[in-house]
Length: 203
Image 1 (tube, helix red, strand yellow):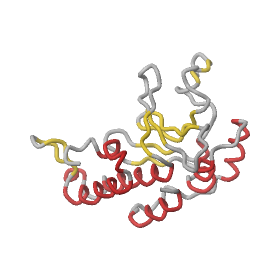
Image 2 (cartoon, one colour; image 1 turned 135 degrees about the vertical axis):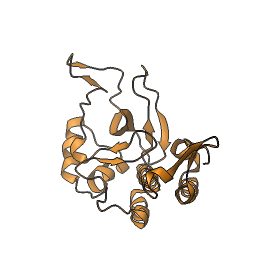
Image 3 (cartoon, one colour; image 1 turned 90 degrees about the vertical axis):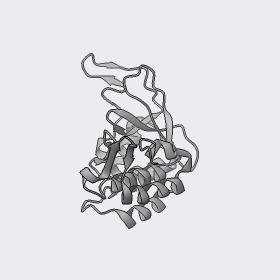
């Protein structure tokens, strides 16, 4: 799933007034590549230059939201990840190859700068677990934004008191939201199905 195909698909279902991917980051891309002293992988360059907005967007998820950073938020210095602002020390556990694009309740979401393929896989790790153990949650940035936007959309399809059914039958996504979301995730990303909808017992 490339970025343009993902954007086209998102536009077919996105219902909120503000579209989260407005682009306009070409100048910021040049600045941040200068800061990192390297040229980024192709898909990441396109993502920063033409896809994300200047400010972050908070996508509803199960539990903490996924905050996808805007291009003005991207930085080499990452407080709490590679830098401790209290001690003013660099944190060596964070690899310089990891580029932070967002977080889910402070759990970092990254792409690796050393990638050489057409696509940039997206990885996530738990915060505060000592070592960073990243796992792939999407095979490309295009797939990542599509899955993030689709789950957000499904979680806004019904009033909250009708959306989640949590009873003796388990923790389930209700009716029309489940019927809309689950088949799409299975079609778009079967290998990451559990990562995106595994919280629901009826997935």
